[in-house]
Length: 319
Ligand SMILES: Cc1cc2nc3c(=O)[nH]c(=O)nc-3n(C[C@H](O)[C@H](O)[C@H](O)COP(=O)(O)OP(=O)(O)OC[C@H]3O[C@@H](n4cnc5c(N)ncnc54)[C@H](O)[C@@H]3O)c2cc1C
Image (cartoon, rainbow, N blue to C red; front, side, top):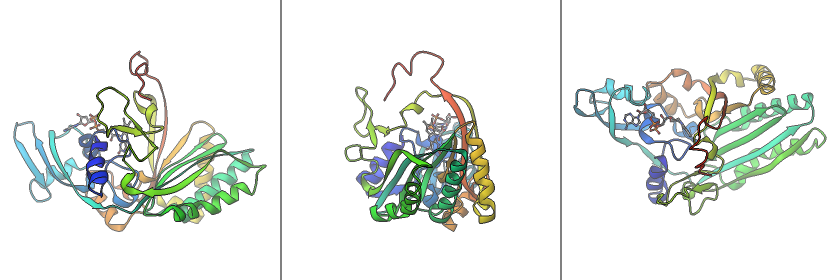
């Protein structure tokens, strides 16, 4: 699981490795599916950091493949889907220098009218395009009914810089108390990156309470409902970065606002690689993944789910 890798690479060794956002997801399946983490806008796809794979193919042969040894198979493993080409028994992943800080911005704003909601969504789209559309910021903007929920993280910004990026937007909200209220007050800040995945140091992580669980195992507070979630429907679409051009933003904001009346619309900005460094985009194009990923600023997800229709996992809920 990624939490084991993060513990070894970041907590113990002080380096960064590109994995998944959810700590309990498995390494082999995520890497073979492409794989995004919270900071992919800076470090790219998990598949792009694959240096070498040991795989047992269907003919029973153990193969060690990389960019020069069986390059077609190696390319296929970088996004071609878990289990498609054999059983992966070892992966070698690139690591990076660890930034000094990782940070967060979390709050919910409610608008008092449709007209106020339109202004709120337009303002947030502008704020994203002008201040957050860069390698620092990842994770989610969620639009639903008359609310926007910001749940973002950042890398490479200290506490003061993380707060100052959001200050103009927060001030704008507070300046119109009859139009907007914070359902969840802003929590914005940054801390030492090395402690991000350290359960003993980061209160955002929930330790796995089950008997015998490894001490480093846990998940992000709020992720617990994903365990045994039953999805009734799931649609996703990459949104091209051209939608952030000034002439297009009104159309984007209007569509988000209309769609939010029916269903929560999540923009996962770390799952579109426009705005990333050029080499990150180029590496993504060398993966077995739809090249649209490199030109999209976000993956839009609309989904509906609930508890599973059978007893068991929920009665053993982990959180
Ligand atoms: C709660 C949750 C959170 C998620 N969060 C993220 C996220 O933050 N970012 C992201 O990009 N994706 C995320 N995903 C999607 C996730 O990347 C995929 O579900 C991925 O396939 C999980 O990999 P796994 O090893 O845990 O998978 P499994 O479900 O065990 O396997 C998925 C597929 O990979 C195959 N497979 C697994 N191990 C191997 C192996 N060693 N060799 C060959 N084939 C193998 C399996 O046969 C299967 O076909 C999430 C999924 C869930 C359920």
